[in-house]
Length: 129
Image 1 (cartoon, rainbow, N blue to C red):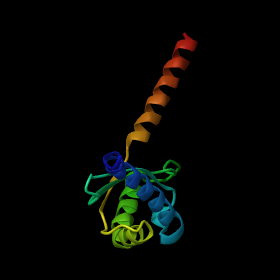
Image 2 (cartoon, one colour; image 1 turned 120 degrees about the horizontal axis):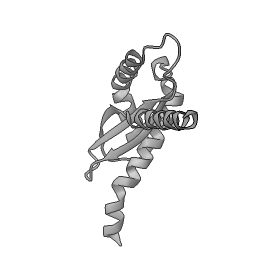
Image 3 (cartoon, rainbow, N blue to C red; image 1 turned 30 degrees about the vertical axis):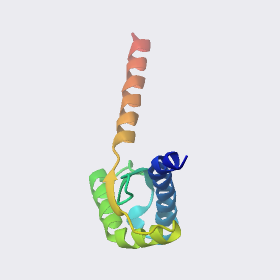
Image 4 (cartoon, one colour; image 1 turned 90 degrees about the vertical axis):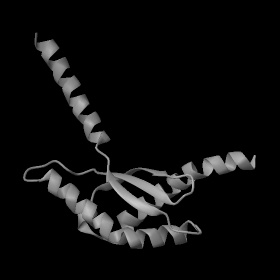
């Protein structure tokens, strides 16, 4: 039973870190560069020393919006806040040590959205034929 709990711990901690990061970013940081940022997922190593945090932006498109610049600004804001986020997570989740946080942009949702757009386009083309 103890072995099962240990093997499940990284997944449980990743979910807790994801939830806590989402809350901290939305409520505590107050950085406008992080507006619309979504923590998509977190994966953590078995020893709980490294957490990869995958994020995306909910609000991207629009007239005059430079998507790449918006992503870079958000990445910089996350990197700047890393120390504060590590401290808060370690304290709030009562961890013995702070995991290293690595923030990586999650382009997966954009790819899924693009596939959906293409499929809709194919449907429209077939109907018009």
